[in-house]
Length: 465
Ligand SMILES: [Zn+2]
Figure 1 (cartoon, rainbow, N blue to C red):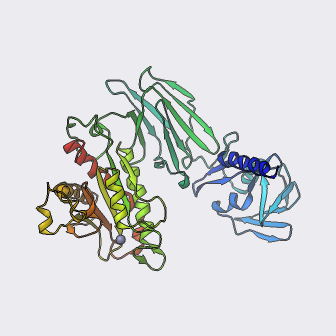
Figure 2: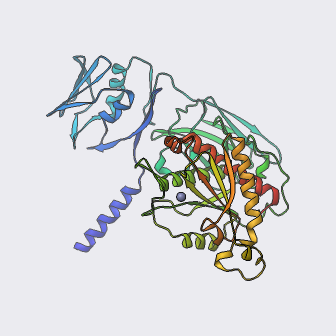
Figure 3: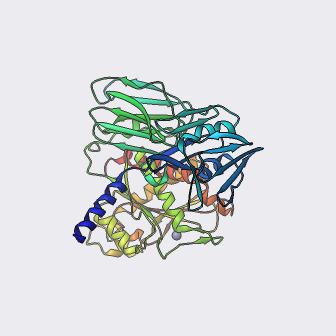
């Protein structure tokens, strides 16, 4: 019996763990944020400090069962166990009792609108069923443009830039899920609204679009009979959906020269880019001002590069997704075993400025061994010219984006152990400003340049760059 009880408990936990967290999202000019909604005795609750502090309230003051916060000159007081609070001594009905849990004062979600309404002197729109609160007329809207033809496409034009779509759920940004006949774009950070509920286009690859809102997010679902590629423009104001097998060079990507599609590319074996966020685990890499660590910067940048590649229809994998130790040999082994099309290792933080792009440097004797049985130390020799080409194209893209670039051959491990074309990219702080290593804009710039370079190489030579 005891055993059975344990099994039953595990299953119950498994099921509840799998259900998505309930969220409330607030869109305001000063901040956009989501907070968890918790079920307490069948009633939905939120932490009142989590709700108000991003909007600029004072630090809450707690005295026993009493809680107080101020907002400009407005004073909110709550008491644990009471279903009413006061704002400047006027009574506010909270729709349920105030709870105190681990130092957090919680109010029913029904109190969100009356509280915000009285504390903020502005328009508030509450999409109650979807748990989305819009403060001060901050909305993003969109229009659709369906283009029929050999390769149909659906262009979504947004009134303001939308968040980068992201498959990484931790980052609580826009998310995308693609299936053969359904593509879902989820916008959590964008105040996206629409009067449009559904729209019909054709009976082919792109059939219809539906807009909905739920759980603190807006969702655009496109249905069709093909797997769709999702391309977000660099300014974030356009998302284009089109069937996957398309030549990437005709996609509307700014600053990308179009190149003819090489024969064989359409049916190329699964080409993917292996991205190596160098260091990890006990190997912190370079550390800066005791806080910033290279291993973190490289991982963040690696995710960025993957996203940029995927948005352009090129598959990418990371050698590590988390803070783990991985030897240089192991990194090369995995890359070779999985038959990566291109390998890119990322570093950050050497002294100097700008970006360095590294190509492998083989000892002379080994450069001439191409075609013979390759030793581990010269696995790279047959791809060296192609590595140099990738490095050249990526450098040009970096320069186009205003970055200082130096390209050089270096004996940087594990480049020599990689069979595929391999390069290294190292970021330096901008003008010795350490914070610039963390700059999101700069990382985006570098990631975009790497992706655009790889797209070009793919177009130049087809499946095998
Ligand atoms: Zn490094």
